[in-house]
Image (tube, rainbow, N blue to C red):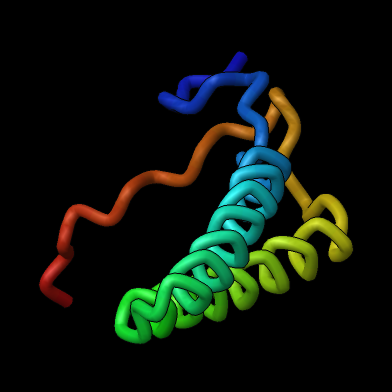
Length: 88
């Protein structure tokens, strides 16, 4: 019997972050190309920087997904007592 506040069926949002990052990469590439062709250099650079940030996030998400599941205590393990700022 768990006494913690987390749900028993909690799931990691990594797959959702993966798909949202892919969606962001597609739009960042499209924005970079479109603004570059339109002669809007500043906006093209901004989209390029965003593309770089999204790609780094995508790489980190893929790394975490490939690491696989980590140890999670079962339902018979009570949650840790939270730190109440003991001034020892």
